[in-house]
Length: 147
Image (tube, rainbow, N blue to C red; front, side):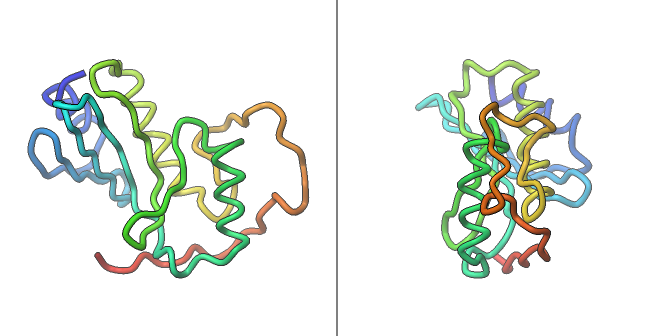
């Protein structure tokens, strides 16, 4: 994968896009998504801000950790600089076009499903128990503070 090819893919799958090679912000149905690459170190990440991390209670944090194991699949919930994100991190060169499109979809879905199913796809990793402590009740999604 190259930055040039990523730009083509993001332009194709997004509603709007701004940025330069190696750093883009785009929107899919009003959900902001950011991609940052480092071709020198063969790394990239696709991220989407979900909520101000200070608004998260222990139940939501625990639900994110459980989801990282069972339902978030190739993306994870993570906190950085006071923001909860849905995150996909991968070596850049080894990615295929299909993997990039799937990663964008999973980051988007993990953002949308935060607070409900906490899933990035319709799949669940085998072994998930229907433990009432792990099933998060639907809650109002915490608001994202302005960056």
